[in-house]
Length: 111
Length: 114
Image (cartoon, rainbow over the protein chains, first blue to last red):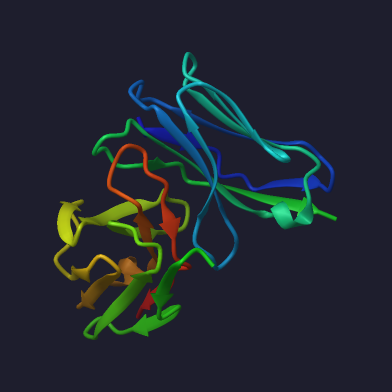
C-alpha cells in the first residue's frame, strides 16, 4: 500500500467554487502534513503546513488533518483562475524520516 | 523567486553524453536535496545532503552522481542515461535536515534523454 494516496484528477471547477482536495495516508506515525502548489513549469511551493491534527486557515485556504481517519484535506474558498495548478500533499513522521508525497491533483479554475 | 536557482531549465542529451545539473540556494540553508518528478508518479527523493555531507541515497543508479562542494551549491552529474530517466529534476533546500522541515524548491531542469 502506498504511503500517501491522492486522486490525480484532473479537477475542473468554475471561478468562485469551493474546492476540496484530499489525501489519505497509511503511516500512523506521520505528524507533519503539508500542501505544496506547483504551477506549470515551476517547482512546488509550500502552501500550508500543519503539525498533528486540526485545522489551519490562511486566507482562502484551509488545511485539515484528521489523524483518526488518516485523512488530509485542503479547501479553497472563492477559487480563482490563478489557483489553477497541481496540488501535492506530503507527510512525514519527522526526525530523519523523509517527506512522502502524493501524486498531485491537477486543478483548473475556469473564469 | 524561492531563493533556489537551477540551471539549465531544459536539457536534451543523448544516451552517451555527460552533463551536469546545477543548483544554488541563497537562503542560508544547511540541507539540500535532489528529487525526480515523473508524470503520474509521486516526487521521488534521490539524494540528501546535510552540511555538505551526503546522508541519503535512495537506491539511485550510479549513472547519477551528486556533488555538494558547499552548503549553497549542489550538482547532479549525469552520464550514460537511459530514456526512462527523462523527467523533471528538482533541487530543494531546507534550513536543517529532518523534523518535518519545510522544503524550498527550484523551478527544475526538464531533462529529455534521446
